[in-house]
Length: 276
Image (cartoon, rainbow, N blue to C red; front, side, top):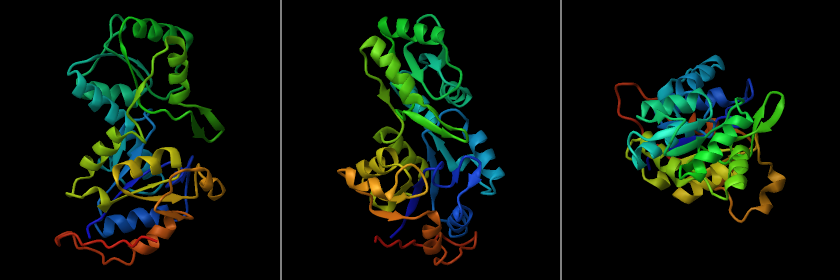
């Protein structure tokens, strides 16, 4: 049957500034066999163009059309709820750019939404303003609820940590758009295109709570790689399980390289992927 991939990035294709062995083969195999794929990230800091530039620097040779961020999903969601929405943003360039592209306007007087993403630019003045807007009726939307973000220097507080502060101060609960929310997963499936049904899509990720749960809720096949957040020893703690567990995407590269290489003028192949 036809098949496509939704793929997490950090912990799957790279760690920090280092490419995970086999990731370049995996991506090259998908491209040469014309298997539809999309890289889906819960990081809202960078624009899709910036993310693509980093991937090219790592040797993956991808374009922004291959990237879908939670900032994009959040901006599209807000625009669908209220076209031209006025927003107060705690976040960085990737989130601001996505909101502006989707017709939202930043507002520090009477916003419709307080939108929270990752970032290093946070101070108590921003938090105080956000709390006041929320208590006056603004809606709280999070790009994701990840409690921390991995960096080259170790963990730093993530979007979920900032959101928890606002929730505690206001008694409100944020609506989160990022993985594992069906909102971003459905948008990513639509962005992937190719007329694929949910069961014809595989979500590849390193985190059970976001990647694997998100794929499971959508009816996708799921592959957990052991190069990132979730280790094999912790799998027994979860009430749900991935379709497959592999050491890294190098194992998937081996499978996809068995497909015939497709000439650009030929129709794409029918990709048969076994479930082990």
